[in-house]
Each structure stands twice: as C-alpha cells, then as structure tokens.
Image 1: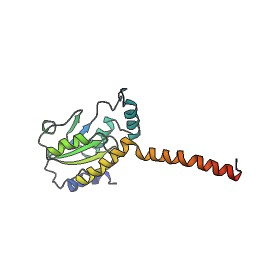
Image 2: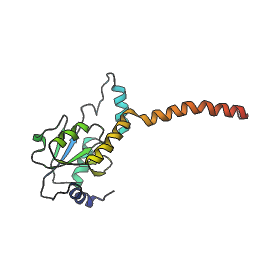
Image 3: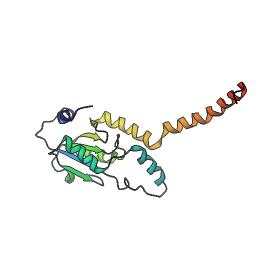
Image 4: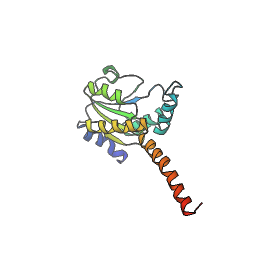
Length: 174
C-alpha cells in the first residue's frame, strides 16, 4: 500500500494526467445505507451491508482530504450528471466499503461522460477503475451479494458432518 505522500503521485500515474487537470472526489451514498428497508429483500440487504463494513461519510471525506486537500468533493445520492462534476476530467470515487458495492450505475454514468476514474476505498486503497478492474469488481460484487462461497461451504458442511459422525460412532469414539 502507498504511503500518504505517494498517493497524489500515484493518482497522476494511474490517470496519466498532469496536476493541471481538475480532480473531483465523488461520495455516493445509496439512500438505504443507513437504514435498509424492511420490504421483501430488506433483511438480505441489511445482511449484505453489514458484511460490507461500510465506512461513514465523514470518514471517507477525511480520507479523501488527507490525500487531496485542495480537490473539491461532491456528494451524490442518485445517478450523476455532467453538472455534478463540472469540467473535471479525473474523478476519485470514494467507496465506503472495499469493493464499491452499489457503485456500478455511478461508474457507468461517469464512463459515459468520458472521464478517467480511480477509486479510493474505505480501507485506504487507491486503484484505477479501468475496464479490467471494473470486470474484477463486478465478479466480486456478485459474490458479495449472492454469498455463494458461504452457501457452498454450508452445503459441504451439511453433507460431511453426518458422515464424520457416523465414522466416529463406528470407531467407538462416541
């Protein structure tokens, strides 16, 4: 991980731009981050958000200000537009979790505006949001939402546990 002094240089390298181009930080908070709904998928949504270990907006703003003290910061609660970021050509999306769980529509909207995007996540990691990283994040986001690895482990445990108990009983350990 980069030290505090290396992050602005890393940003310039990642975005292949100079310090003269405007950089804007973008905080996106889905409306249900603080209190997920109680409708059909509300319990599942609360579970996914709790496991994502979301950082609050104040923490993310402080993290951004520590690395980019002079850059403007925009807070969004819906789909972004060009008016939200002005003439900025470089954006730093502030993911409150490690993978930007709800940021796919925001990334698509900014991609359509033809701006270069990087991400600073709640763990303090900085990385470019190029096509390769966006595909990797999409896969991780699907796994996070569906919890497939956990369910696979549960199924294996449910099948293997009775077999191991029978083996113990057959050997006389119980």
